Length: 74
Image 1 (cartoon, rainbow, N blue to C red):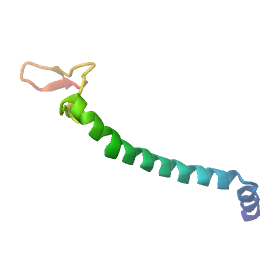
Image 2 (cartoon, rainbow, N blue to C red):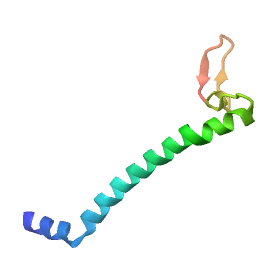
Image 3 (cartoon, rainbow, N blue to C red):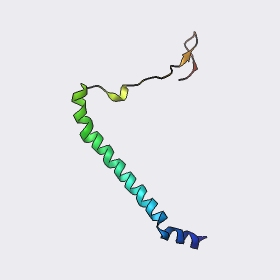
Image 4 (cartoon, rainbow, N blue to C red):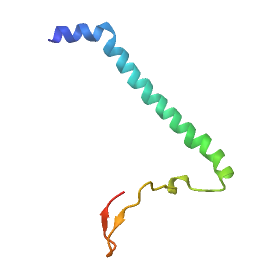
């Protein structure tokens, strides 16, 4: 079994997948840094200081009974 795994790993499939995970993680970090460090500070004055994190839209509101208890969550 170890021999078969070694053959599989050396074929390139496992190495390619590992390289893909590493590159994906690095790309996600770069994109996050760009958005938080460059894009959002430029967008904030245009939006007039609106906090986009607090904006929410409820598609289906929760159903409540007469006592104000939640019967069915959204």
